[in-house]
Image (cartoon, rainbow, N blue to C red; front, top):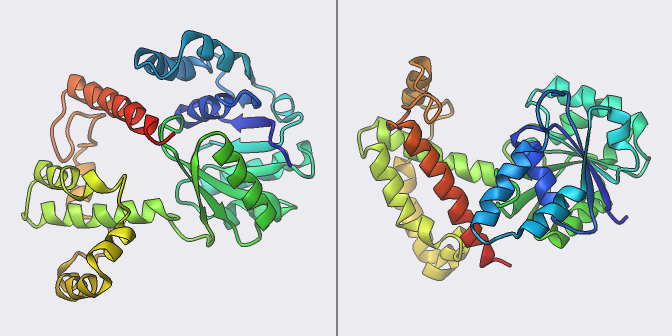
Length: 309
């Protein structure tokens, strides 16, 4: 099946970002559906495009063409009409997602693909109330989805391989770097890797081995610097599996292996120290610093992804 029309359900941060990611393909039209009638559903899209234009990653003409391929409606049937692919971006609550897929299934074609943008929840469970579970698939985009190339295509227990291949091929066509997660495991692939690093990083701060800024510097200017060009398993082959085995034997017994969240992290949350949004987490942040870090990240991603094309 050729994917030509996409319905995005939800116009929040991820929903508007997905619209931009999809509508950059000149052969794709996107219908955005939200209940927030008073809010401009395309405000987030326009804001993202302003950053791209300012960094010479998009022209004003291209922005106008992208907007022309988008439509907004607060009517579910209108949004779903003729959709080949439906992507939900609703809150991360299992029952909300299950009920949404149950309710929209009678409104779409029998061959339409239903995709969930969940970052950690079970695709199999999300499909639990649908009639055709073989067409439900995970498509975990990373924020901001119009810049981060990775999309995890996640197979639920009953997701068909044809659906996996169709979504994977479409994502490659629009310039993404999809990967297939063939088992519906908690956290999929990249989040499991990220949280394994988080666990050790949080432990080192909690144990007084280094402060938060130092841990970040060590990662940013050490292994993190080469990861875009040298995968961690490729690195094992580069140094030699025999050396990697010796290192693992020496270091693994001393790494964090807690199954519960960091105690220090729990304390910070209990004290209302929520990071950028409150001005303090592991470090202190002024509103200006938080805005600067967000802006700098997007500008870095724009430059970095140019090299991937």
